[in-house]
Length: 186
Image (tube, rainbow, N blue to C red):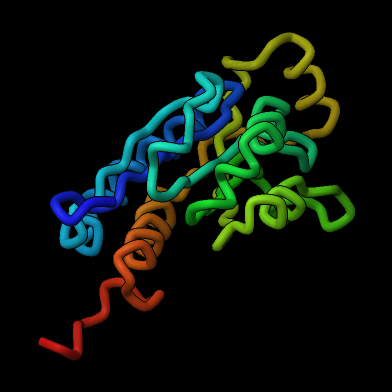
């Protein structure tokens, strides 16, 4: 970050059917558009994780993955392993997307975000409900969804995505976590 410019934030995610990429794009938009983001001159750059973006030129990273059976996608796990040292050198926030039924993930399933968060020293992790559209699934995936009686639909919570983006922008700008509260300094 230079004196003339605010923080540059890489917002990247792994997605199998596009829903998690859409969340990442919304996060990038909302980070920059938030009051704290605008005040700090924050620039958020969305990129697919599949394109293997280099995090080194960025001041912070927001990194996410779709979750299937409690696991991040392999490309996300590999990216974190390959780039862990660089990621540890800057603020990182994680998000997961995919669960659409209660609870967000069964308590007995492994959830990759826990070890990933420890590896990169993430400042936070957020789970967002996802989208399950049978029309986008392969034959095998549709069979699994049917066998598991998984709920279908788009239950992404855009207000929660926006609120979290505002919180992250506030943290990057050095504000307290209660982003949006009146500034007591006037």
